[in-house]
Length: 106
Image (cartoon, rainbow, N blue to C red; front, side):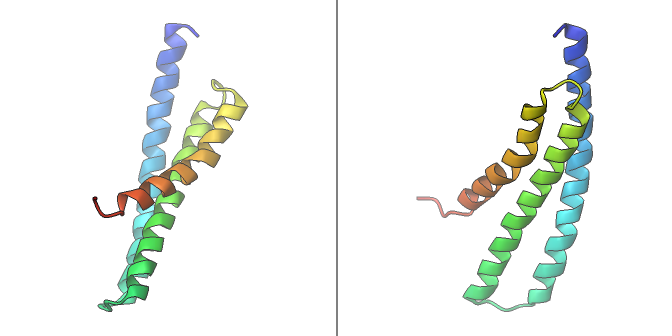
């Protein structure tokens, strides 16, 4: 791949990643706000677990949207198998990171 193609690929990736982040974060903000505001001021284990699961699910949804947007933007320049990995791997990876991010420090 020559330097012009690399630059084009980079610009397309940044653009599609930005669009995916905007749509993904906007959608998950709305989902999270609706679910969490519906829980009210309850402070019990069920509320905490529901909030945790909503956060993990929202992160996976956002990662899927970003993966899809990046795949669409790069599909002509990236092998098809690599592009599919963006959609399949992003949600799993992000869910794992979000779950470990919520663990208390040792």
